[in-house]
Image (cartoon, rainbow, N blue to C red):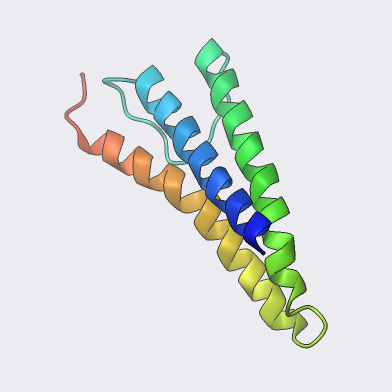
Length: 106
């Protein structure tokens, strides 16, 4: 369980790192809330950070979900969705909203 928690913390850090890279690469411009295609060098680093975050979040979610799978599979699926949503969505969304709140260039 401790390894799962560590993986979830690293996944959150990877998503924050990727979002910060995107924010620095788009300084002065708004970042879209949805991830879109881009061909810049920074975008490839952002994709790698997001991929690492997703893989680590899946590794961290499996031990948490495994505790409830035999007795309550619906609860287990709900916990998995909640953990994946919080770990993968909230950090990127928070950094994006903070970046878009600053005054932008015309």
